[in-house]
Image (tube, rainbow over all chains, first blue to last red; front, side, top):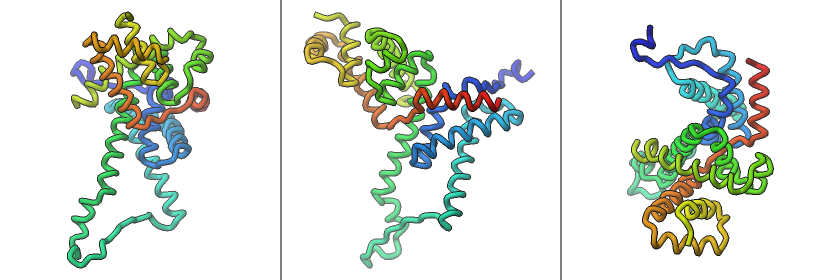
Length: 192
Length: 75
């Protein structure tokens, strides 16, 4: 009945999770925990937790949104654990020593170049996820070749050997992938 | 002279610094005469910049296989 009313009802397809969402979730996690290995572990835990609670999935949110929600909780859990180990959270504040600025430390915080730097980091993380999202929409072989070449930086020769293709095949796939990505990013990133 | 298709592939190679000197020269001559390819080249460079800026992270193929097997065990 819901479908007739035009509402999307999503279904979980765990056998496609790794190909479709692993890198997307990984980019999100790296932005939060700043450590490759921990980020990978969190993604793995997210998938496993997703499988365990699959019966609670109602299909109102997309699969990806649902997985990100689980990952967010895993990140929080991770910080809880490390904080209880250390005893307390790390809080960094710098106060200027000049009396004329006394009292307006809040304004200082706003103008702090450090916080500006953090803003670009957030933006880069969003950009990373937008790109990853576009990559996941490519045909499987194109996304594989593009990821190996661009993300993992594997040499053309090695990719050809591993996938059993020749160099001109590879460049044609790279070309198609890049063209598709330009179009996709134009929609998802620049005209957001 | 090279065709637009050839120019596009050389331009892609150049994004990974894999275009030879001769190819780069051919591309350069093509780009001054062809507006469409020159636009493609600009967009292509923009994509390269964005990818670098985003510092993309990805699981390796092997890691993905391991992850898949682990999920399969738990399905």
